[in-house]
Image 1 (tube, rainbow, N blue to C red):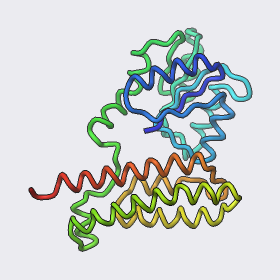
Image 2 (image 1 turned 180 degrees about the vertical axis):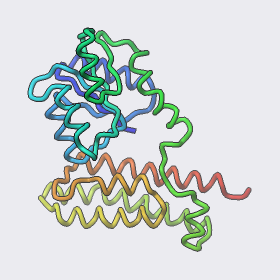
Image 3 (image 1 turned 90 degrees about the horizontal axis):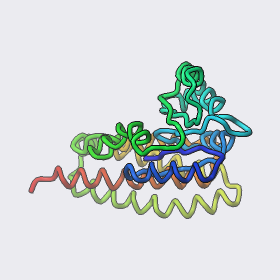
Length: 238
């Protein structure tokens, strides 16, 4: 599960990343300012939550918040402003703009943890894994559990191989060929009932694919395949 940390001050960014890391198992993505964060989002990054400094050059935290909340692709993402200001006017402005909350420098671990509590619960319960019930997949495809495990294992290997192939294609400007490969992987997710993984692949921006965004999504898709296989094994008789 990805957490984005945006701050132009490298020390503050490192401290906040450390606190997030101490809260649980998160994939932390950093951005050096609002403009860098917006570029990453436009390139296909889909964090579960964003912690963003209020005052930055190029694009401030408030400006990034307004862009995020004005875009249907991102407006559901919780956005937490990071500030040294405690004045009521700033807090009210952030709330009106759609901020999920704010934390005040110097950071305290509990300030960060409270905003990650929902995601920690999801990780512990497995509810962050969005996929069809394996029993329904078996019924839909008309196959045995053993055969579905073979398919999931094969798809895992296909994804691992695709990571290197896509890196080469994108390095050589092969946007169209890369998109064809991603579309095939999306079809594989749909066939195997991997709804969340399929949605992540579908969200990659056609014609503007970046290797970083593609590799991040592929890592998540592989994780989803492995989780689905584990759910299938647990559900198997005996």
